[in-house]
Length: 409
Ligand code: DI6
Ligand code: FE
Image 1 (cartoon, helix red, strand yellow):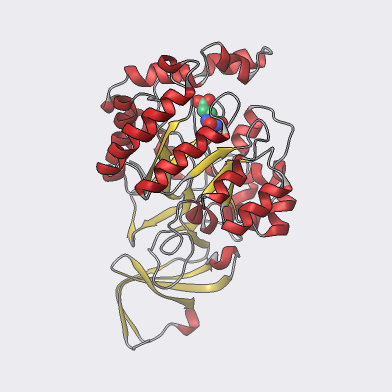
Image 2 (cartoon, protein in one colour):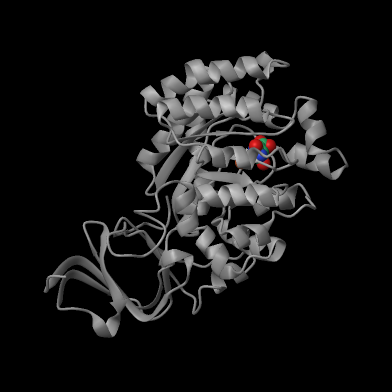
């Protein structure tokens, strides 16, 4: 490296937890230099090179970690489903509610009625909770419009959020989320509309970064999912999949065959699925909020994911039905207590592996020279403390693209 190094900002005096290779790699009394929104140097404070910085922030302890990445959310929706929550606790199952036209379809009705502005404002509020906990990148899915205009409306709102919010916002088209009421009994008909009309428009207007589907008995079969994947591939859009959430259909193996970025949920995934996912380095996105809320008993095969080397990510799945979760830190704790992840694995799941699940890991997800300067200064002594507390607030300082982010939106 040519010295002297000049940079815009130097941060020093905290434990820097880089999460390189998905491991802590702690640098005690570390420092980090940023120029043009990127990390240009990091290491122990005692080894800072001959550096000129416009600004120098002395951190006086604490932990600096990569900004958190929530790689699976459904944050845009109309209405709420607290009545359904109550119903479920009175003994009615999620599948039964869906079969009666409730569940996802009740959110579809409310989302269709809502204007772009209403959707934008309600999503901003929910998003502000995530951002307050150090989230610097978030993925948001469509999937409550379920007709061409309303799916496009949702995706446009996601793009608008991306312009307004100081965070990276990635958009995923999940038009194959549920069979629209207009296509009741004709899932294939809706899949044809998605493949032949919607996805080409979405691609042409650059409204999505990936394509997702819900492969499940109450949604789309593996064959229908494959049609969606083929259409996406032809358009050059990466795919991901809601797979093995309620039953084992080998959807995650299918996703792996299409080199999916991720397969998500996975409570019913098998060892074969894990092997297939390892071969394609498809990320296993675990969603403890939905597991918890549905009072699921089947655990995702974490031991198999470890054995075969499937990267694991953790996300909120923030949605009005199965995971009204607005705290990624709570999800970290639940991934450990419910699924047996270690705090280090859980933290890799909201940093480097979450970046992999979004295909942005060459620029995001760990603190390394050349990567985007998205990081958070936490008032804790050890990274595991971020996973350990249940609820409460840990006021943190967020640096987004090298600049301090205001704490309120
Ligand atoms: N699985 C889920 O947990 C969410 N979507 C999906 O495919 C649930 C979405 C909802 O119930 O509104
Ligand atoms: Fe989901």
